Amino acid sequence: MIEDKIYIIHYDKLVERKEHIENQIKDFSNVEWILNKNPEDLSDCELSLFRSNLSKGSKSLTMKHIETFKRIVKNDIDYAVVFEDDIILDPDFDVYFELIKEQFLISDFEICFIGNGCGLQIDKKEIGNEYIYDSYYQSRCTDSYIIKKSLCKKFLDIYIEYDEYYMNIDHIMNKWFKDYDIKTCWSGKTIVEQGSQKPLEIFKKSI
Image (tube, rainbow, N blue to C red):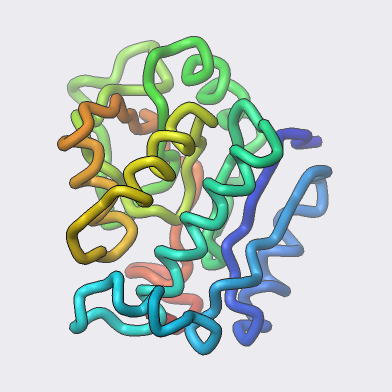
């Protein structure tokens, strides 16, 4: 049983994705869906924050992540897990998640990417007995990560004062990590895959 707070970013028109993920999280007891900030719901003001060449789907995804940060801070949650709706969980997710989480929460890292987005992996030569490794200001896509409330607060402060056009959520995260010296890490073992990415491609891309 996973009792940690889980936020799932979802576009409610993607019914197949919701059905698939619901089958994976039957033992998760504290799940909240992020269903607002859909592409057709974004205001002209929100759309104007982004580079014009981004799709509405990409803009919506970024705004959904920001909405997630707001909820974590508002509800005073020390840390939370964030999933996008195309995830495929490792068969041993429960076991390795606890080991990764335990090391992450006592570290000074503020976010831990637990998926294998873009096929990014820790070099096997560097993997020892640890479950998390410094990623040096680098995300590993935003399909799955553990984030501390402290970073959510920082992100929201940056979001309010930011005076450049927004990019895709993973690109803007990477920029903020470097610009604001935010400590980031990856799990040594990846425990989530993206169902909309190669080689799986179970779902069609939505952005």
